[in-house]
Image (cartoon, rainbow, N blue to C red; front, side, top):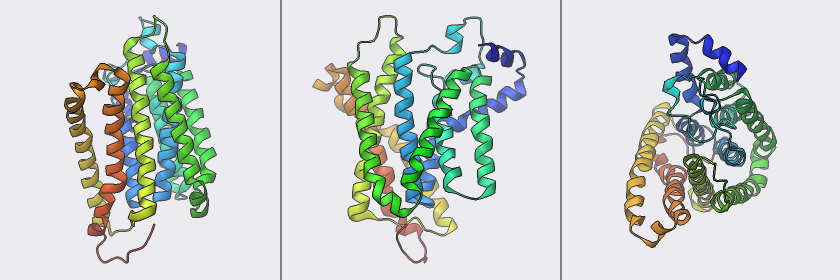
Length: 318
């Protein structure tokens, strides 16, 4: 807490506003947008790399949060103040940092898979700024940030050998996907079946359990999408600039609409059913199913429209 106390003492309105903007680059929505931009417009292999590191790292991150159940800094020290604009995004337990996990995993993949100097410099800058912003805003300690940084970096380096070229990708993709499924399923089961101590924060525990089923739905959606792509879809990422801009902006808008629209529909559909009487089953068919459908839309259904954005470019496989 000493370092956070120091940062608390040197805060200024201008720097606080800047850090609040920077920290958003570790948000789930930004991870989703960057991963899909790569998957839709650059390289499916690189896209799968980012998804594998991002989802696998998030499972580990959530598991550590529930296993250690470390309160947020302002809970540990009631006299400590945070930048209020950051409070809404600081959900769940503190250790380790989810925003740091997201940004290091995503930008680490981009930096390793691409050799452009400007891109690597930009990634390196945000790899430093986003973790620092979490401490400056007062929502994470150096230990929270350091553990997440290390976990994400290890995954980036460990999985690179599976995605470094097309041959390695074809040989390894299904091993990686099945390992991700086993990890996500074990976490969802552990979180749902564990009897947490009476002193555990009920809201944070519920948040961790919900995330377990959300992540399992994402991994199942990734597996279904990869199977369909291999069997039938096999879409091409190439398109002229106007096509890339169109499929990215329209695709992201539609996906956000799907995410927002599915929640009330699934809640209404299952609220009066037998699943509503069983919290775990209810999370499976709402959170898990919702994110499964979102991933399938993003990786299977939307790519079916890509020939419309390809212009006169020669079709081929990415």
